[in-house]
Image 1: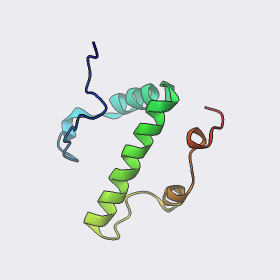
Image 2: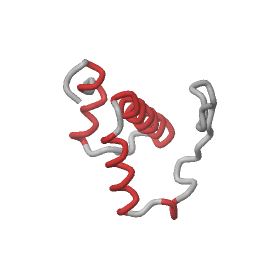
Image 3: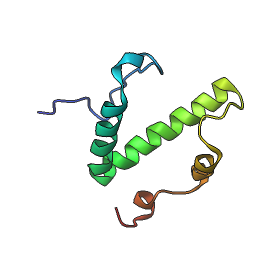
Image 4: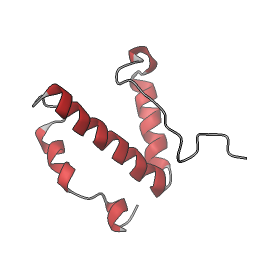
Amino acid sequence: MPMGPTSDAMTEIRLGGNPAGMDDARFVELTKEVLGSNRRYRTAFYEVMRQVVLDSEEREGSADVLPPSADARHAVELPETRGGPS
Protein backbone atom coordinates (compact mmCIF):
# COMPACT_ATOMS: atom_id res chain seq x y z
CA MET A 1 0.00 0.00 0.00
CA PRO A 2 1.57 3.36 -1.02
CA MET A 3 2.37 5.69 1.84
CA GLY A 4 2.73 8.97 -0.08
CA PRO A 5 0.44 10.89 -2.42
CA THR A 6 -0.55 9.15 -5.62
CA SER A 7 0.48 10.54 -8.98
CA ASP A 8 -2.97 12.10 -9.49
CA ALA A 9 -3.07 13.78 -6.06
CA MET A 10 -2.82 17.56 -5.98
CA THR A 11 -0.77 19.30 -3.31
CA GLU A 12 -1.04 23.04 -2.83
CA ILE A 13 2.18 24.78 -1.83
CA ARG A 14 2.46 28.50 -1.17
CA LEU A 15 5.82 29.86 -2.33
CA GLY A 16 7.69 31.33 0.61
CA GLY A 17 5.07 29.92 2.97
CA ASN A 18 7.62 28.40 5.37
CA PRO A 19 10.74 30.61 5.39
CA ALA A 20 11.94 29.17 8.71
CA GLY A 21 11.75 25.62 7.33
CA MET A 22 14.99 25.90 5.37
CA ASP A 23 18.56 26.68 6.29
CA ASP A 24 21.86 26.09 4.52
CA ALA A 25 22.39 22.62 5.99
CA ARG A 26 18.85 21.48 5.12
CA PHE A 27 19.22 22.92 1.59
CA VAL A 28 22.43 20.93 1.05
CA GLU A 29 20.81 17.74 2.43
CA LEU A 30 17.73 18.16 0.25
CA THR A 31 19.89 18.85 -2.81
CA LYS A 32 22.02 15.75 -2.13
CA GLU A 33 18.89 13.64 -1.69
CA VAL A 34 17.30 14.83 -4.94
CA LEU A 35 20.51 14.51 -6.96
CA GLY A 36 21.11 11.05 -5.52
CA SER A 37 17.61 9.83 -6.35
CA ASN A 38 16.65 7.94 -9.47
CA ARG A 39 16.17 9.73 -12.78
CA ARG A 40 12.38 9.89 -12.44
CA TYR A 41 12.56 12.06 -9.32
CA ARG A 42 15.43 14.24 -10.54
CA THR A 43 13.51 15.00 -13.72
CA ALA A 44 10.25 15.61 -11.86
CA PHE A 45 11.99 17.93 -9.38
CA TYR A 46 13.59 19.87 -12.23
CA GLU A 47 10.21 20.25 -13.96
CA VAL A 48 8.58 21.51 -10.75
CA MET A 49 11.33 24.07 -10.17
CA ARG A 50 11.27 25.13 -13.83
CA GLN A 51 7.54 25.78 -13.55
CA VAL A 52 8.09 27.78 -10.34
CA VAL A 53 10.59 29.99 -12.17
CA LEU A 54 8.24 30.48 -15.12
CA ASP A 55 5.28 31.26 -12.85
CA SER A 56 7.40 33.64 -10.77
CA GLU A 57 8.51 35.50 -13.88
CA GLU A 58 4.87 35.93 -14.96
CA ARG A 59 3.77 37.26 -11.56
CA GLU A 60 6.82 39.39 -10.86
CA GLY A 61 7.30 40.77 -14.34
CA SER A 62 10.81 40.81 -15.70
CA ALA A 63 12.48 40.40 -12.30
CA ASP A 64 15.60 38.24 -12.44
CA VAL A 65 14.71 34.99 -10.72
CA LEU A 66 17.86 33.20 -11.87
CA PRO A 67 21.26 34.53 -12.84
CA PRO A 68 21.52 35.17 -16.62
CA SER A 69 23.64 32.06 -17.20
CA ALA A 70 21.01 29.87 -15.51
CA ASP A 71 18.17 31.50 -17.48
CA ALA A 72 19.66 30.13 -20.71
CA ARG A 73 19.08 26.60 -19.40
CA HIS A 74 15.30 26.92 -19.92
CA ALA A 75 15.69 26.00 -23.58
CA VAL A 76 18.24 23.23 -22.94
CA GLU A 77 17.12 19.70 -22.17
CA LEU A 78 18.64 17.97 -19.17
CA PRO A 79 20.74 14.86 -19.85
CA GLU A 80 18.03 12.80 -18.07
CA THR A 81 15.45 13.83 -20.67
CA ARG A 82 17.76 13.03 -23.58
CA GLY A 83 18.67 9.57 -22.29
CA GLY A 84 22.25 10.58 -21.50
CA PRO A 85 24.28 9.55 -18.46
CA SER A 86 22.80 10.17 -15.07
